[in-house]
Amino acid sequence: MVETSSHHKKLVLRSATLSRLLLLTLIILFRTLLSPYDTSAPLNPPCLSTPTATTTTTTLQNAVVWDSVYFLRIAQCGYEYEQSFAFLPLLPLSISPFSFQPALLLLSAYLINNLAFILAALYFHKLSLTVLKDPQLALRASILFCFNPASVFYSSIYSESLYALLTFGGMYHFVSGGNDLAVVLFALSGSARSNGVLNAGYICFQTMHRAYHAAFHNNRVTLALQILIVGVLCSACIFAPFLAFQAYGYYNLCVGRSHDEIRPWCKARIPLLYNYIQSHYWGVGFLRYFQLKELPNFLLASPILSLALCSIVHYAKSRPRTFFSLGFLTAMDEKSCGVVFLADDISRTKVADNVEKSSVRVEERLNLRRRKNVIEGELDTANVTAVRAGYLSASVLPFVLHLGFMACTAFFVMHVQVATRFLSASPPLYWFASYIMTCPAKYFRWGYLIWAYFIAYILLGSLLFSNFYPFT
Image 1 (cartoon, helix red, strand yellow):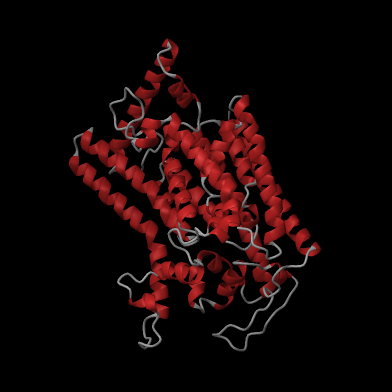
Image 2: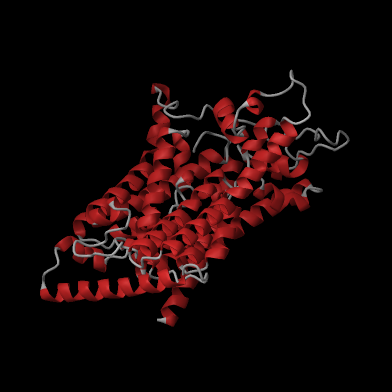
């Protein structure tokens, strides 16, 4: 078992490395063969704060496209303009020590992001093993992630790689019982991408179950209140970096300005700079993208949204009581609050120690009862599948709920074409894809279709994105 795990880890490491080399090769190749749609990226005017700075037009800078321009500019010059505050600071801060030399800055950005992706793939494999408890399923899902349809962004100067590393790392430590480290990593993910704050949902999910179990099964109301307080504080810590960055923007753009200079968002009751920038400069808002002219972008996002919808619907149909009760009921005959997700989460905090021990006993009794029912032939087909299939385990529930919220946000609120990379760090997408590849023949053909979609978007993304054409 140890040898198998080590072998799988090496396969994931090899796949992640080869996929990055492939992407970088494709980017260089397509950039060399084709002329870019927009050639303004190499223009690099002096920083506003340092007028004497020299401009550079190196060959390497020709590879800087789309949001990469913003990230590099922020690393060199700081946040000069209002719209630049839409790009969170973790990536610029990571490469800013190399800002004295543009070529070195660019190389360090590529190196950091590609190394971060490789580490993210390894963390994803560990997470998949812990949650699915199926080595083959975890390996297949990890390789799918290595060649995911948003791969070009993970090998470019974007924040996706750092976000994936911190998110998968946080998820792994969360399900393994390391809540303190999980909170730190989730908080850092919120300083890489704004959707990192949504990782607080995992803490909220766990807190909800622990508090319910303590109050209604252990009859310990005081413990339940302690659990709720700890959960609120942990969630606040995850939000803290993002909110601190908003405060930084308010201080720089609002404080000390005259009434004529002050921006409209500064006068709001809750002055959120990020929301204003997204709405004012990019037209982000509920149903604002539902226009006939945007139909091609909906088609571009349809594969990833369809995969997300299928993964959620299949889980809900296979485990309806678990899904619609938010995990409080995991079987028809179960009287517990259904905290099987917490079975492997042996907390290191004293506050939740009793709750976790009880949760383990609940899970052990439930599995024993299920195995007995399977032997006696008394368990229906859906529940047999739920016991045997890793993707349909109750441990997957919070990840499916998180994906559902993200997918709805991408479809109804955001520029829908961004969904491909927005959802690319959602584990259920790869777990479900891996799962249906092991299903009977009538579903197996979907595995080929998924691989075809992933490969097509890798090629299409490398071609379009690297030459400044719209992609996602």
